[in-house]
Image (cartoon, rainbow, N blue to C red):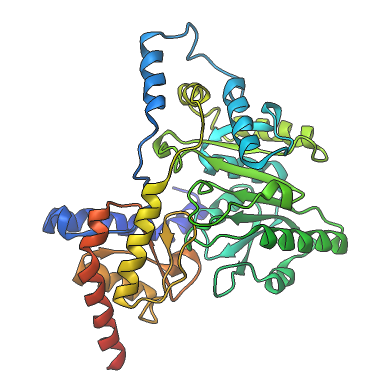
Length: 398
């Protein structure tokens, strides 16, 4: 029999997957062009042409021993490329190949970081709404998740955060740009957040780490990307190449710290040990080798901005209430029905629109949609969204 913990977690399985599977069922019945699936955040861009050129060249000119075991920290050349990439983006931040570890996606990096620092029942603050897997990652490391609601505009409510920090608080997970809302915290927001943490560290004689989950940092529209290394003192920087390079299926991520951070060497030793013993071993050595050969790890993201603008227009014309996303590829509108689960079921069953209820992200009364879909689907969904909202208004008047 399976463990009681896993059995319980299975009953809370992801709404994202449920709606995606419902979408597949509806497409088989009505045809793909009659179903509007906004449930899953799958990248729509492909890796840059240089990636495929490097892969083709490697296939025709293999390296002897190129598929052997490698250091658990990752290939040196891949870590050097990541350190160079972060230095180009954020300046002199003290990140070198020695303070980067390659992981199995950003998810692997978060699990490595949490396993490295948590003792049993140490508290990890998670802002709601949140990427649903966070709570499971905390459980994996025997920590305790503490939930703090974001403000109405999905920025950090510092007063609420202060109320939830205790002497057991060991970490805060901060996703920016934010999934599921698309909100972006500014440099000033990060600095104010850091100041509060430092005050609370002194008050509780604690050490609070910030796990800065940043897989959407190249998907920022019309705003400057903040520099977390300059704003946050005890920073674990987590990212991947799933979204910006279109490599989601390759599961290549990394965890980086400022090598000048106090106890940086001990942190890195813990990360390497956790990366090995959690069972990941290494991120794909071939993909590490390929990204190390790219001229840049930055890729133009205009396609996502175009989709953001199109989706905002569709929702605005229909009359939905939402905070316009500044980054990523998600929007988190208010549900026109009080029961967001009932709303998403109605959208699927009557209008073939696949959405995810906000309650699945710890924030009832909302729903999430991903605009990482074709422009054609966004445009074709316009009348369906209008009809859906009108149906909800009629239901509310009864």
